[in-house]
Length: 611
Image 1 (cartoon, rainbow, N blue to C red):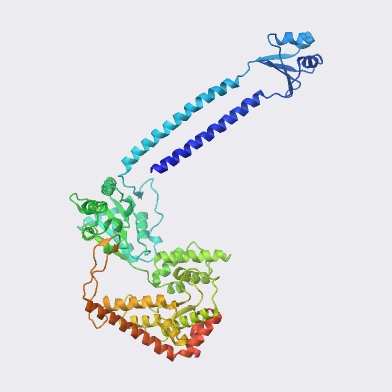
Image 2: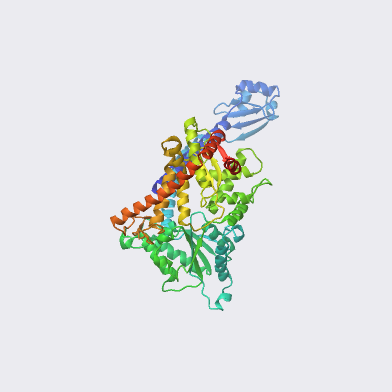
């Protein structure tokens, strides 16, 4: 803060000096210009001009005579010291009758030197006054800042003079159940009598949880747009400061302001910044975050009861929140926002392409089918990337090709068109991706192939896109083993056709290993039985777990490793059997990939059916 003040002070001083220099320069130019003479002649010359009646009028300024030949043009002459102008001209032979015909004006001479001297005396004084003014202003600002340090800087929506969030429930596609829950809360605040007649109590708090990008903050903005009551918005991180007690003071200030305007809604974004479990053993009882959390607990359901303030909060880490925060009476209502299904994704696409000119043949249903697992934020990014691609291609409308290409860009990254691939690497990549595709096509539990490409994107040298026929939230053991087999299809194809494997399988092996380990440790799909291993975790610190608590012996750990290997071997055996059986088909697919680099679903299925 001090460095910023010094920078501002330095800039102001430099600016002040520059302005003064400019003023002095202009002042000097004006003074010089006023003293500027055109043509100077002698008194004899002036006398001659007067006798010839060439002079219209004269202006005497101090010891200078300005004789105007015309209204704009004049000549100058010096007067004799101690003698009047009239006497001087007569002495030099000027006819008196000619002098009397001329209008003579007498003006006092301006002493610019004295004015300049005075200016040079005043300017340093003004400079000192400016410095003292700035110092006092900064001191006053610092004092005011110290007083405002404990104030909560919440943004207010929904009242006169306040900005609007610009979002309503109509702007949120999907999440119909979530909207119903939140509409009820808003309706309760608008018309409390309808609920109070039935003995209903307004929820103290509503917690929105879900994966990043599913629309938690968007729903909060929609509540702000719909509510006809004041809506206070603040981020959890804005409570935390270096000094102990500031966070709790800001909480008190926030709720004090809210009580003045109740009924109202308080929205805390990223609640996990201040709501993490207490007792982590870090910071002791004077931990700033813990004191802030304690104050929130007290304000939400402490000794002083309040029924007209609803606290709305969102987080994607509900697992780290303190249990006292989640109990009924504080956050009474917990709303989980899931990733959108196919129908919801299509509706979200309609919202994000509403202001984009689309080609009439665009099929948003196909785009929605190709984006399983996409969150609302990723779909919004997809629509934006499609518009950017269209602009790059100098198109006036967004087409289907741009939307489909944007999916791959969001998933894998930009296409590396300038990346040079040698023939051997291209062939290896083609057989690797063909291995994935063939195993996926001939396994009953696997997902059908939508596209295969050996064009490098992001970190991937090639990719195979699979689209499920039906989206499901539950996976069976056989489906996991089939997924492991598909992941190992590229590894197996390299081993069978080239006799060795490459580094291109590293990501596949990582994912296959994670699936197999989850099947054993979390899902109880191994002969070890319906047990979860390593489920208990230590206290949360800095948003991550310190370490996994081992609740099993070394002997059990050895058995877990063996069972993980069994699942990997089962998947590998399935992949090997299919690739050996469909070796000719795989070669056709690989050779076509080397030639064309990309295969869409129709062309790929045509190759499979013909072999």
